[in-house]
Image (cartoon, rainbow, N blue to C red; front, side):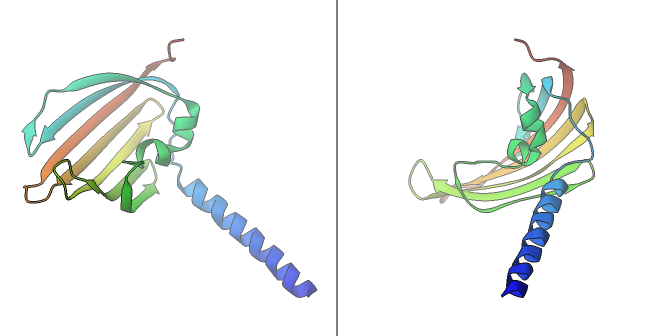
Length: 156
C-alpha cells in the first residue's frame, strides 16, 4: 500500500511539473509592456481592401500574462470543434473552427487562422484570416493585419 501511495505522489509531482511546463510554453520570449497601445488595422473582404482603422487599447498586465486567452481564443462564446494554439519564440499561432446558427437558418461555419509576433516589449503585429461559410452561399473571407505600438500608461 505504501508503494502505491508513494507512486501516486510521484505521479502527482510529474503531473504538476508537466502542467507547469505546458503553462510556461504558452509564454512568448518577449514580455509586452502593459499600458495604452495604438493599433493600426488593415483589412480586406474577399481580397477587396476595406478602410484602415486605428484604435487605442489599454492592455492590463493580466491580459499580457495570458496571451492565449487575450489573443488566441477567438469566438469564446461559440461551439468550437477545434481551438488550438502554439507558441514558438516570440510567435503565437492560433486556429479555430466554430459553428453557430446562421441568421437565415442552417449552420454558420467560421474558421480562423492567424499569428501574433511580439517583436519587443513595445511592438507586436498580428495577421488573421477568418472564413465565414453560410448555407448555399459563397464563403466570405476577411483578412486582418494589425500593427500595435505601446504609447504610454493607460489613462485614469
